[in-house]
Image (tube, helix red, strand yellow):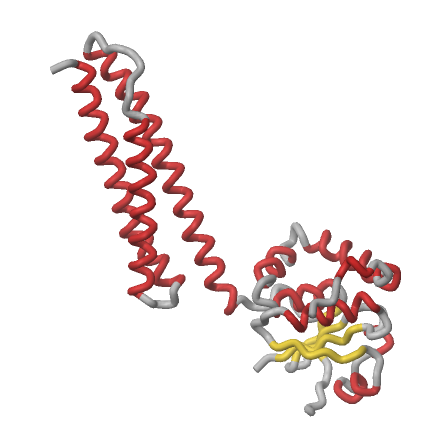
Length: 133
Length: 124
């Protein structure tokens, strides 16, 4: 098999496996967050979780597919591994960025969800008698 | 149910506009308004220093807790759905001094600021 085709195939296998792993981590651990955000509404949490993961897959697979092309020929195994390493490195950084982006979305949603129960931000200056009516 | 009573300066145009704005906002906590220094305010809070309520914004909760100046402003924001996050942020030790200075500046200039009608247009 042509070494460049082999490099592409290895690149696709590793990138897709990494994406699936990160997405599954997000799916499993994000659920707990979302259930808390939606005050125990499991169905809504699962639905939002699923939608987020679908978006995550689409963006990552889109990037992996766009970044597939190698602009030069690889002559031997060493060059193939080097090319693979730089491609996978960028995929990992994109995955990391997306993952932190998702964490940010989760924490923002949680922050908003706890607002109705937030105690007053400041302590009173004193106390006074209040006449009813 | 907690209610926060705002004692505002009814002589100042800006204060009346802010009051109208506060009334129009969606809330977590009910806000009631009483013009500061009036008989109604004295009847409701007989032991409060009413002279002081004419110089700085004062807010009294239905439990009798009194908040003055910057703290009273932050409590107003805390009552609003859209601005509670801001009140918590501004009350942090890093931002509180800035909020205090800004509010003191606006308070002292409130009669002058009332002339700039575009500053806070009354919402209809």
